[in-house]
Length: 184
Length: 157
Image 1 (cartoon, rainbow over the protein chains, first blue to last red):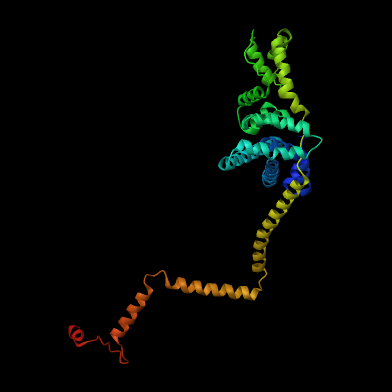
Image 2 (cartoon, rainbow over the protein chains, first blue to last red):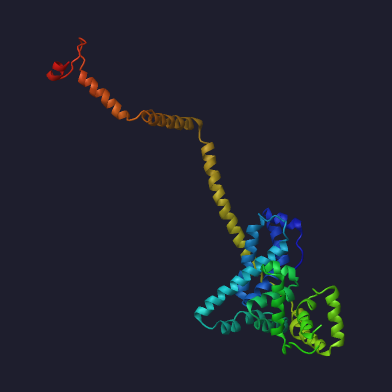
């Protein structure tokens, strides 16, 4: 995600709609990408994106510019996406098999609509399906968005060793023939 | 360093560029000398790292921004509506003609005076009632003769 100029943030905090749109253009790709990968549903991802930016708009007036705006955005995005996924999972669990439902809807729509990107998107989605929510969130933030361990830890409010551990387990799950142990 | 420990580091800090200094050197040296760990690292890159590097970032449809902007404008209108009502109320009060305001103020003062005039000295009604009772009891006539009431009272007096 590109850095957002402080001047833009200040103008947006004063109600400048043009500045807020600039913020949206610079960061919506990140927000939507994380939301889509975590929720694995296009409609939910769009709703998450809307929720995130409405929250930002409301809270920007009281933002003190002491903490990094990026860190704040990462946290809001991750939390909103995770909550959305959990809510959907509960609804699906009440109505039927969640895993079956999530494999047949949503993500496939996102893939089919992007012809040029189809192969890489499909491949990424198939990989992410192997992971649980915690692992998937960490992998998305690390591999797709390039966040450091420290940034991921701050965004998810977890220990940095927990980040390390989740990434390790996620990669073990993704490897075709995970190897453990071995000779000296 | 054992291969298990090296592979743990490869799966996390090493592949993420978080490894520095002594440990980084150790892992690099081990990978040169251990074919098994070297193969492990290549499998990791192929299966778990490269696919994500090749993925292009997805962008939200334009309708998402339209919805956000619409919601914000609606919130702003509602917010301004509340403040507008408060401002209208103040404007009405401040711009009311002075004679009317003066009349209203006087009326309020009169009502307050009446209320407070009756309050603080105990049971005012009772006090008046006592006065009335005494006056009727005394029944002072024109000659100044004080009628103390019945013959019994007259007898006692």
